[in-house]
Length: 261
Image 1 (spheres, rainbow, N blue to C red):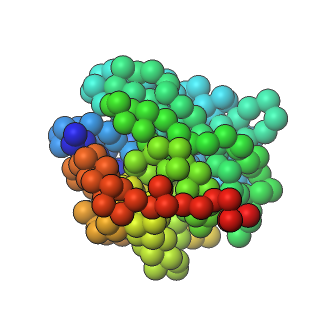
Image 2: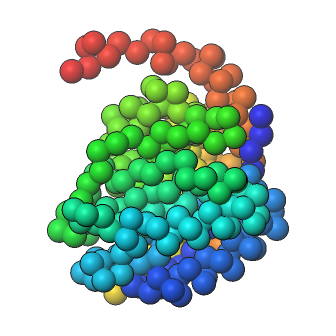
């Protein structure tokens, strides 16, 4: 089975949801020209890291963003790994990844488990507790958010449960671009899975972001990589390749987790 995936590496207007939604609409229409099966957006794409104003600009229960993706999915008949949004709930704000299928159905929500203290996330966001496992097109996938990729045990918790593709949505800063590329490649190799990583581009008042969204195969080979600016990255992934590699080097069968504690 083959799936075409498009990553929308967008520049995000700091603290301006209306402008970001308008930009996303245009970029989605452009991405549809490639006839993708799945479209991916970056982390906190509606607000950026305007954390001090989240109580004002966060999306209540992510309702507006979910509706946005439902309408786009039904219109274009495409699945969305809809990046993450500032999700205002009863007990505060979470950084929540949204999965919507091509029928316009909300398939899964995953809220970021590991909050990044260097960017003060822990002061303004609440951590999630659930896994990012979900299904689209009959395949088992997983979604995580940015800092999560520094925790290989969290990624393995998903791939050992059957995930064959790891989606990563991020706002990864430019000074740590080498870490971004190295960690993503490592996660692909050690988990024998595709890694679809959608980063943002541009700057905010405190950070310059790396771009370099990547699509990596289960051998760790880079299938496609973006530059630093806003662009749409598209590639085809072959699901049978995951199974073939896992059969050739059966790391999941050879694990000895009873000794890992």
